[in-house]
Amino acid sequence: MSKYDELYNIIKKEITTEQLLPGAKLPSIRKAAAIYGVSRTTVQNAYFALAADGFIISEPQSGYYIAYKKAKKTEEKKQTGKRNILYDFKSGNADKNSFEFNLWRRYMKNALRQDEKLLSYGEVQGEYELRDVLSDYIREKRNVISSPNRIVIGTGHQSLLGILCSLIDEKGTVSFPDKSFVQGASLFGDYGFDVKYRYKDADIIYVSPSHMNKRGDVMPNRRRIELVEHSSKNKSLIIEDDYESDFQYSGTPAPSLHALAGGGNVVYISSFSNLLLPSIRISFMVLTEELAEKYERELYKYNQTAGKTEQIALSQYIRDGHLKAQIRKTRRFYTTKTKNFAALLSEEFKNAKIEISENALKIIMRIPFSKSLDVFEENGIAVLTESYENGILKMILNPSAVNEDAFEAAIQALKQVLN
Image (cartoon, rainbow, N blue to C red; front, side):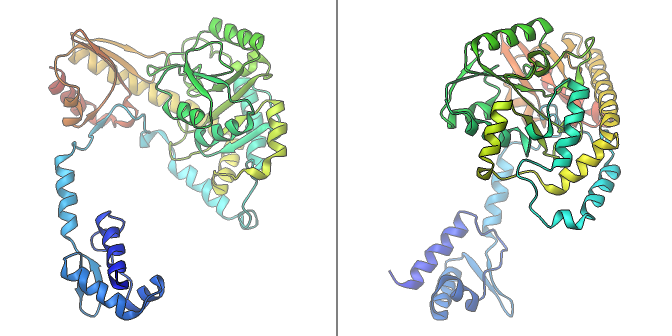
């Protein structure tokens, strides 16, 4: 095969696999020759052949571009796919009115002015000032007692669980509450752990006490105490994902497992995605003393995944008391929103059983149904289905991502699907 045939095939593959998109400009003949290590004549012949076959077009005085005929196929594919989601009751994304963007921008701008701090990569474990303020925050809010040296910062739970998996020498059994914990279960499985579900005698028990399932049920105090006692007796490790602990409304917020266990065999993990914005991907975990010592010895193996600028901004944001204010605002905002939407549903669907979840963020709706579940997305609605049997559909609606101004239209869209 000639060199120009080889180059032709390389560029053709990049076009057909959409690594090069319609309208993209190709390197000049001189640059392409340098990139691919061939002569200009070879590049010119390859370009001529690609143009002759309709993969690229030549624009006089400008250069070569990827032909637009691919764009038509892409558009046709979009048109034959599922419709865009107009009413998202599934993702749990944030409502723009729940967060003061201007205030956060001020803290980000202030962080960007700290030139000296931003010249370095930052601490592998996370910025000390953030770990320090988090140590005070979790002690006050959840009675989790930890020095900054046992706190590890990361981008999302997945990165932190990856660190945790690498710190655990014996890859035994790990139990998850149910199969909805896909990412965590997949990660542990990739590290060689034997993944089980609702298996109380596992070596590691992953649990989210304030968000036990799709509905957002909260683990009762009695079960928390039983779990702590059982894990202590069996020398198992508990991973406490404290997701949505700030949204407990049924009486006094339940204590953390870490507090009940005295922290001895509990790794505590939390984040700020629900309180601030999903895009502020800063999570943290509190290691046990033994795991923290091992982490410190093996610190050279890891990299910090969370942005330094956001860490600096968040530490000052918390220190100035804005996180506490945001928690109060977010609680009121989302619980009121949920109640309002539940009231509208009750008025419209008299044949449905409607209840609000324990954490007051979701609506559980049971209603007679006889259609395909595909009809929801076909009508631009995303819902979470818990069960569909014997003509009864049980679904979970999270109205957080739907603007209240669109509630009436969303009700009508649901009515068209459900009636």
